[in-house]
Image (cartoon, rainbow, N blue to C red):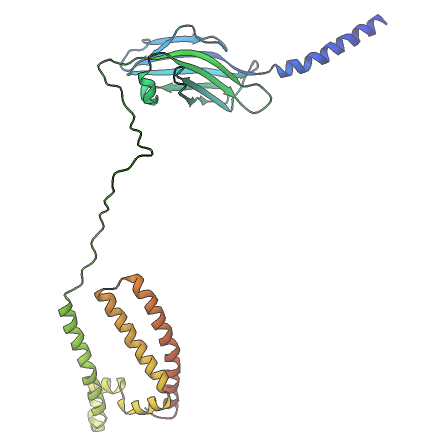
Length: 309
């Protein structure tokens, strides 16, 4: 009986101590060192000190303008080295409360490192009179408690002859005016020259129509032997103009008017309009030309099928 009673007591004690042991698991670090290396110094020169496990360094660390601060550690959960989800070096000015965090570079085995210079610090930290508080923050997913503990004191050492950089806080202020320089538009030829050549092209149309109309009066032998007269005969036949307008006056008039409108739109684009102005106009005129042209060409097809050429 006494044996069973003793086993029962041990089981109860073990069951009550198990949750406490599980809950006691927390993140921390080991094998931590902090070193300061001056640019141009030889191997072994500079400052290097080991940081006690999960404790703060007793002596402050000084960082000069030409120095590089290096912190290495191994993150561990409980007693097991492991990669943490977040490992940060947290710097804070105790007087103003200004703080900033720098992430460590973490490997799968938990080894972490970070390097900083004065250029990486905010300009507000360059003029502080008291050392900055440097803390190590380690946390990850799971039930283990995160670690947030002091690591060392960081003194920012500056040359008194060098001015401290200032911050120009114009975040909400008035910004200087921006002057845009656009490329000049393409220049067209002088309007007088354009109008002269347009008049010459328009003047050739009635002359061409008159020559074609008169070519039907020439003897068949001349019309057959003259390539120029053959080309003119194939183009225009003004003799059918009254018949065409009598059979379908509205389609022919609208179709010819839409063609001249498109030419006028192109003329305006050449002289003054831009692409965004002519696109809607060409779309409307082109639609009218398509609808009226199908009706006009249907009338022409009827005359051709009737044997009229």
